[in-house]
Image (cartoon, rainbow, N blue to C red):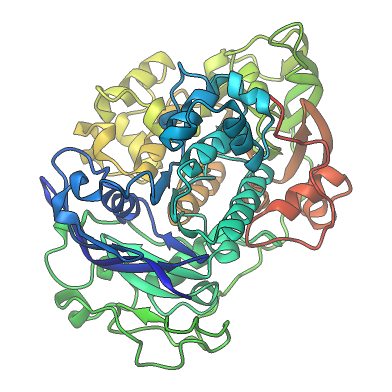
Length: 597
């Protein structure tokens, strides 16, 4: 496989210091290489450096090779003139950040076409057809489309210049599993037809396992492991890779407790000596703490024992003084002990809930009925648009249902009955308020300022008291979500609603938050309504589960029984769409077609 993209000795530096260092990577024509790692590892900065899109004050150095062309990245964006957007293109995670909300989709695709084709409506229609969209989408604005359709438009714009290399920076993270599979299948088909190189940046290990020919693992600005496809995840040599792999919740069984990598990724410029992962590593010794290991072929065992053969010319490389033996680096899964299945006392009963946002639109909720017991954990799963979030918003009073009843056995005030934790803590927390001020406000609003303190709340979610003086921007994503949970707990609610509360988190941080929720349920006796599109996650947290589609509940039951043998074709289709863990169900999503707005 000929090398098409070559990056040598990439270094990225910002005002505070080094962000990426000693980074080498290459991608061949028609090859898919996945770059994985937690937030803060430097994945996106690598993509921005290669495409000349670094933020102000951040500079890159190193060599970029593209086919027969070689440029020095120290020359800044000017050095990439003629390459960026033409021969190498970037597809971002959120199409709302890459598409203009005030211009029609056709105009945005046309702007990326070669000059001689920009006035051709036929060429725009052809580009839309290539990404499985009808020609009418050219006349629509992004806000008129579903999430999957918007990402297809963004993909069409990224491919309009016929690039040789496409960098996808978390291009499907915000999509539900069936839409994600559709977009990834579409991308694979186009890549195959064009012979295009694809660098896929993702924190979804299932996507990397299923889609990548090779996987590169990044931590604190450096590569720590690289090698062939799922061999990296089947037989990891670096403890960090093994930690990520073991944090991924299994789809086929519930475990007693998820394995989670302790702590968080350090800022690269704060690592002054040794291996950056040493403070989080159970195997670290004095050499690890004082001497940085090079990226090289491991000296212990064979890099492909129990795994796929190594890709020619790309042997496994690992930056570790004590690499794991692939024969023993296997996941140890402890199945959860059977729990008391006695039905809890009732807390909440929803009957016949219906909600329409306009008279000419299908109902967002269509005769929905669910129950939640005191102290019970209940899951709601389904694709985007299934009605999950609308149901949650009705429960906490952010929306008013058109018909149906919401009955509580408790006479407590609304704020004491239910509180909600949203998907994105960055947008849920006030950036101008300190953590202490935000939690104090929540205690006063919930009438609990005399019964609880800010210190109590921080202790509940495992954060130090010193965080009271910090603002959200100085916290990691997982820490921000812990603060959001603490704020929701301030009124001492009976029911905690988590609306996709872990879907945007790295797999290791996700495991930490799921373990935290399990501890809080046991400690506080809370009931939990957990809304997600991830079947593996809901299996770990919910006693019972409801499956929603198009505003209706299509299947419900005890989680283990339902997920072991789903009876509805839609539930089986959700299983079949899970990346990297595809079941043997032959069902497809059927009518769940994302190609209509």
